[in-house]
Image 1 (tube, helix red, strand yellow):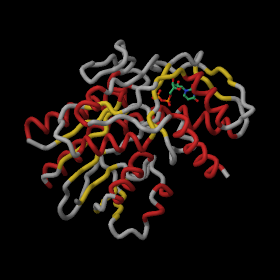
Image 2: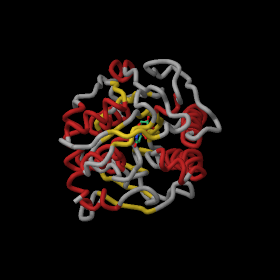
Image 3: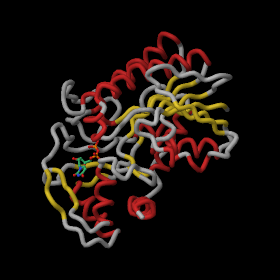
Image 4: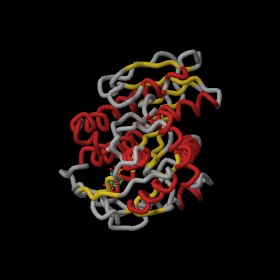
Length: 310
Ligand code: UDP
């Protein structure tokens, strides 16, 4: 197939491109390079099945020839980006998704929207199943991302219902792995960098908030299965193994054999108290569940960070 991946130079996008090329597809990667990294695609420069288009999806997505699948992964996504690019994030979720859907409609291609657990906001229901509508502050610190993705889901379902575009929606929970930006600002890069430098680990608040971390390969296996399934309602893909941020710090200190201690930092506003996916739908409809244990995934990720920090 000929497959378009928006956000191809990002952490998830670039791993997805590798997976699709490995399956023998032709891939057209699109990225504005606002948060993407050229290094993530460097190894593909001589691959004739891969084409790269530098473009901002909020303007227009021009692709010539047939397209069978569109994986719409473009968006700045870390809380640090929320402060740097709030308006652009809203444009990417709204106009970027509109253009990706327009492309899919024009090419009669199937589109998969990468949505997020952030549509659940600071959840009042635990764990979060797809039937939960969420608890989002529309004008809060994370609203540009949360609301953009909620709008993107609404737009995707509307194109599905009104224009008969074949669509899929994945709600991605915290994911980690090699190629995450070193200074991305998210918890894993911050903790691993500090641990490898034997510097204090910055814990926001008392570290009792929880997250559930999925290894990138597991996530993409689930997403690929969803794309090739006939499931049009949203599906959570994530690892339900939940732990506190303090426990996560301790695990990283142990695995890096670091001398770091933890230091307290203020808890950002609207930081979700707990987050864990209910993956019943993915298990039942896609026969998917994560395979990589956190220890194993963390060891691989720490090795990648160690190499890039040199
Ligand atoms: N966090 C932290 N120290 C950091 C970065 C993040 O304690 O240096 C916390 C953050 O406040 C949140 C959790 O770790 O409670 C996960 O944060 P991340 O930015 O990775 O993503 P989120 O799941 O909040 O979108």
